[in-house]
Length: 190
Image (cartoon, rainbow, N blue to C red):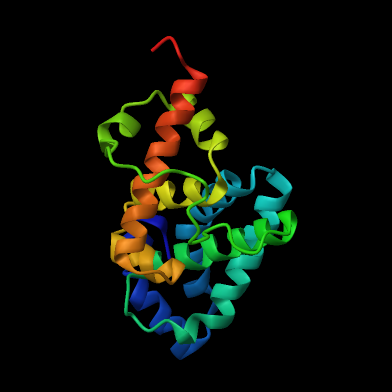
């Protein structure tokens, strides 16, 4: 199957064909389509190339072993990102021995009354944005990446993190506030 044809074949068709025939070319097509994106998420969250490479392989092993459980309740890409984020967050938790980086606690941050407009984050120069994202807690970074880089809907993020939609909205609001504060600390001249 060539790459032109591959891009036109729907994920669900590849999944069904793989499950029906067990022909690895169908899973390989999914791997080629998503491995770069998964690796990108892993390197962004884990910050170490060797960890990201290992995580990508482990994530695709999980996807491979659980492909029959994909229930089409969401898009396949959302399911893949859910596995990716959860795997990376679990790895970070183990590494830092933290119990929950998406804690429901107030994190000693006062309630954010003023909303940070999306444009403030979206118009940051890419290099500066990377530095800002590395300054905020990994849970906040992950939620901002899910929302703005991956374009996931609030309900999808809520499902991935097993939280309510209102909790996700508040977490995004707080994460944007932390990003804005980090930006002002890193670049006070602006």
